[in-house]
Amino acid sequence: MSDIPANLKYTKSHEWIELLDDGTVKIGITDHAQELLGDMVFVEVPEVGSAVSVGEECAVVESVKAASDVYSPVTGEVVAVNEELADSPDLVNHHPYGDGWIMQVKLTEEGELEELMDADAYGAAVAEEEH
Amino acid sequence: MPNNTPLYDQHVACGGKMVDFAGWDMPLNYGSQLEEHHAVRQDAGMFDVSHMTVVDLKGKQVKAFLQKLLANDVARLKDSGKALYSCMLKEDGGVIDDLIVYYLDEQHFRMVVNAATHDKDMAWIEQQAAAFDLSTTERTDLAMIAVQGPNGRDKAQAVMTPAQADAAAALKIFFAVDIDGLFIARTGYTGEDGYEIMVPAAQAGEMWKQLLEQGVRPCGLGARDSLRLEAGMNLYGADMDEGISPLEAGLNWTIAWEPVERDFTGRQALEAQREQGGLRKFVGLVLQDKGVLRAHQTVTLNGEAVGETSSGGFSPTLGKSIALARVSASVGDECQVEVRGKHLACKVVKPPFARNGKVCVELD
Image 1: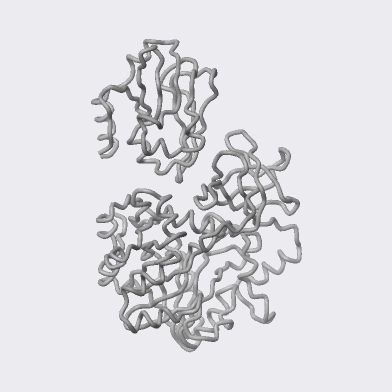
Image 2: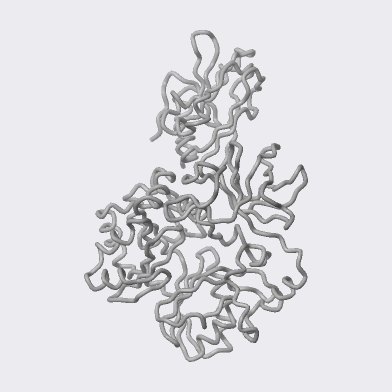
């Protein structure tokens, strides 16, 4: 079974969102997603300062198997990206919720957070996908 | 329902991530494709290739038949056990499949063809064989394990009887020996030394477990693909198919033009193509920028399309992305590949990219 931390929010397309103390959010892909994709070999992150919209492609994770789009769970401005991924894309495999984060976003639509799934709902969605 | 090979239970026991491949439930990886890939380049790995089709051809006219069926010439096989790589062509020169044929004696050859093309291959072979005096027998009673890597031969010999191990140790590259129930071939699809071992299905699981004990790492289809790509070996269905001439797939070396009177199927079409010229060339690409090359991306030269990748991926040995591509003859040392709207810089090289544990191309 894949790891689904209780303190995070999730999307159906397997992104996780962590609300930070300063009101920004950190975004990455879930343990389940990295497991499905296999060993990561390249992550294309957005540019700092660029605008992202909810549900739109914002990054690409490329594994040994295929390239997959990462969809932004929120609307806002990218304030930081994980530069470590350039040399160590495998951080996404080994620490999907920690050092394998992809980008940090300053929200413009706070209400969007309410639309996201909690850990229980995401766990149920994953379980359903597997059957 | 997908087919299972005799090693299915072993894959599950080893934590194999099972996927459907041409109707077979096969392991994609057992956790990490990258680690499996490195194990084969640096030590020893094993692959279940039991899904491939093994066909025995026996009879008085088997040699004449194969000289007609195959673009390469089995007359080159003089010593028992010697193997030959060849394409099987349509009349129009398109590739029906690529295969390995082993010469056992004048009236007995063994062929190994792809799993994904099983039905059409068998239909074609049966149809072509009708005019000749020979029998064809599919060896579904055999499983096949490929043990590959610099330590692969030693580790595989450790699970054989002394007589089998001696015979295996004495094999030259691209030779096979049939001994006491095992068919041991010094062949493979990884660019490393090793064996492909045909073993009776009932004994395959035991052999797999013994190989595990020797420290041979189970490897899935993912690593098999990245290893063959690095080794510059074509994949049927990706790098060539019925719509592609072997002359545009880097397979000229597998066509035996001499003797000129040997009228193999597809010969006239290939001669016409050669005469006409203007053929695209088949090259290797090494990505200079960050990113990953994949199959079916457009190759460009200053913005103009000049070809397409047929296989691509990340090369664990090079630490860069590589591809095989069919491009116009005008392409020189450099080109670009279009990935998500960007034109990424590539160096054009002659495959293989890596073999025998070493990088074979200049990276800078």
